[in-house]
Amino acid sequence: MPKRDGIELGYFDLKALAAYSSCSVRWLRDRLVDRLHPLPHYRIEGKILVKREEFDRWLSVSRVVSPADGLDDMVDSVMAQVRLSKRVA
Image (cartoon, rainbow, N blue to C red):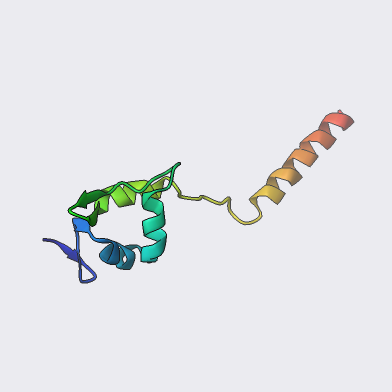
């Protein structure tokens, strides 16, 4: 099975998923029963497994993209200049 940083890819138990994701086992366990956005998983005779690709897809929904620093100020400045030029014209 392919490996990355010494961790096998494919299905992870919660301990391996915690190492892969830098999240705690407790936090991951809480996500299994989250009512709004549960972590997809498999339960085989009490053993919880999470497929790496499904975890990556699940996590990507929470991606946050912040605007570049100062972009809001730049837009406000340009808009103020546009408003000012409309008043003068």
